[in-house]
Image (cartoon, rainbow, N blue to C red; front, side, top):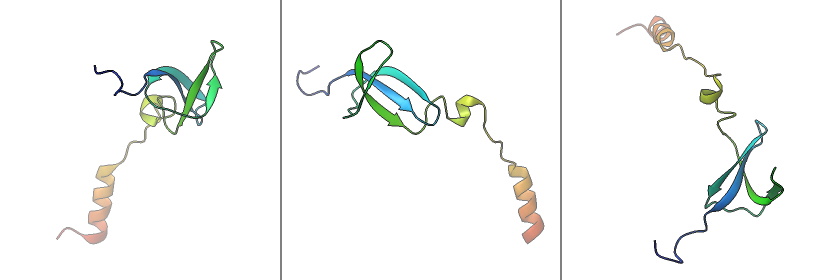
Length: 81
């Protein structure tokens, strides 16, 4: 890798406020806000809207759409032409 052209790769805390969940990982993302982590060190924090703790696919709260019922209802209303 060429020196001086890549962004700094460092530990960052990603926090999902909806699920009250945070995890520490390495990233090139930057933030002015910081948080004190469990190890006593201060890291930049990035708030995210969805994480594995709040996404329906990962939590098992997915909704199954009844597409067959929708098609039948549409055909009943407007008939098959």
